[in-house]
Image 1 (cartoon, rainbow, N blue to C red):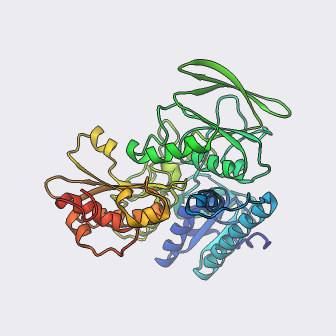
Image 2: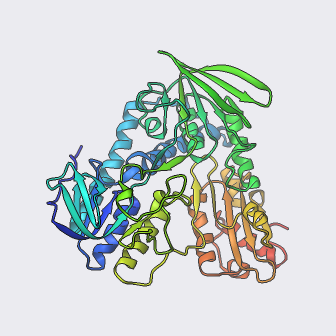
Image 3: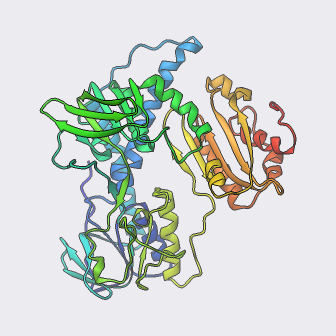
Length: 474
């Protein structure tokens, strides 16, 4: 394995100091350097990449790819192909995951050098007007013209739970380490992290139980899109308890005693391990923001304008520390906006459609307005649904429970939102994002020639429903 990136010399002053080496941070640094600015990228990780690359998106999707393969072999018997039970080597799986991470981090380090971005490994916090204090660097201070805060977020814990000292209660970072595959696992939280990691451990052999306080899974997505995913979870997991909360966790040497409280009362269960996935909180607590004019809300998120400028005219903030959807691709675009604004351009972050993807089996993706959001905001919409039972490609893949959904403005046909549940949703949603950003109408999608037979043509046929009927449905 390659070693950590070599630190660059710290100057007395830099035009732009970027604090945080995740997707938002390095995207901002690269863009600022492209604008001709002197850029210093500061990260306290040994390798560049942030939570997404080191402890989040990339390692989880690497494991979820394995999960998809395992599910595909299990489902193949309906097509006349029977596979023997797979032999899973957790150590080899960890090694493969780590190799993917090393390749990407090495690539980013190379891009920093190629693009003239100074990379400094240190912990930074503000030390007065346009100055940073650096812990662990060869210089204690760094003056800046502008700073971009891109320090990301961390998992939220339950009351009286300390992930750092617990042996059996995990956050998402611990879960991705794959230290062991427990016989039994409780997942607390029915959002995308809980569902994704629950499916990983179930595919690798754990008996998984999930608890969620809400009355359904994935409350931010439309219920009709979540329904096929909920059915799969019901089939794969040992149990799913909705409208249920964890009131007590007692850790012993070999298990965790959990008290669950739901509509039917309270009960105790034992699990080898517990994964807590109840949300994330911003990493703003150690930045000494009281030395600046930056303003945070009650939850610690930094308040910014459309250019990502904070209450301090010299400081910008991007990504998870500002709230929003807390997605890597959103942070990257915000980083580029901040860099261009610092360079004097009239850039602002005004994306109409930031896609969200859940890499479960089946995958779930949406962008733009959801049906429930439109109803909440009293926006007049027309909802179009194309069930994949009418798709020849979906039937050939055994995925007829999928669906493509469009949210359309009734009088104009303008595309306001899209949702997809089923395989390849991660890629199919891009057409919806492009349509929304370009102001396309349903007729544009309907008249676009989609290849046959593919899952992509469900988008075109769904749009055809606005015009009267789809070729294969309605």
